[in-house]
Length: 88
Image 1 (cartoon, helix red, strand yellow):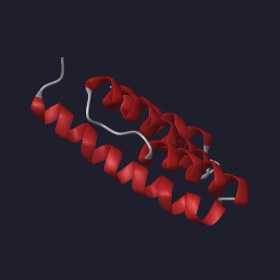
Image 2 (image 1 turned 45 degrees about the vertical axis):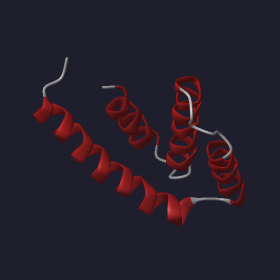
Image 3 (image 1 turned 60 degrees about the vertical axis):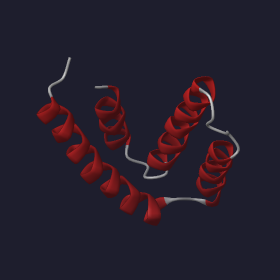
């Protein structure tokens, strides 16, 4: 179990690394990458979050959205690090 300070540190790291990945993705993305990210975003937007089951579905869709966004950066290690921090 993580302490509050550890959770804060992880979220701070995620914010910096994910922003970095987003900046890179903005310059390396392809039309196919954009379409994949947009599809994932629409899937998230179409999930109502009024029950715990729907919230779980939305969280899963949010993971897919971010994975596709980070994949657009074309940086294998960067994607792996963002995933590792998410899974802590």
